[in-house]
Image: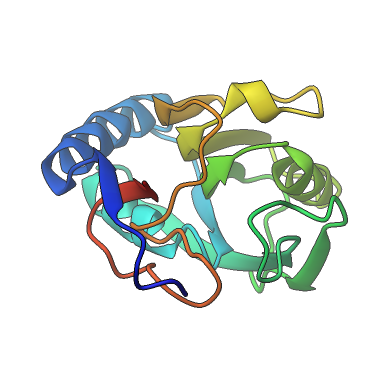
Length: 174
């Protein structure tokens, strides 16, 4: 962690909150009268997922998958491991996978394929940040908060090493 770097805020706490409310309304419409399970990818999406599910007006279950592909680097290794799997039986249920960011798409694609193998009724994805310029696989999130250019970002659940997840805004370093 370099304490000499200055933060450049990309999305304020207020902008994030407004976007999460919008996404919550959209999810509520999509999953009205469905058997919804929200699956949060740990660790990055836990803050976004917690805020999002509080905005969803549809009854839902929550579960978690832990993946690993970045380690302590700013770029993905391209190899995605599922470190901890679901505890919920999702067969026949409607699934919303929630992640903090889609970058190359390797992680989200691996999770989507893994979830589909469990025979759910449907699978959709929702990410806070979409970085389409870095995509290496054919995958577009069904819902997303903000589209961003190719910059390394942290805060609001996103980390650099073990730090910055607790910042209530999203920023990059100048």
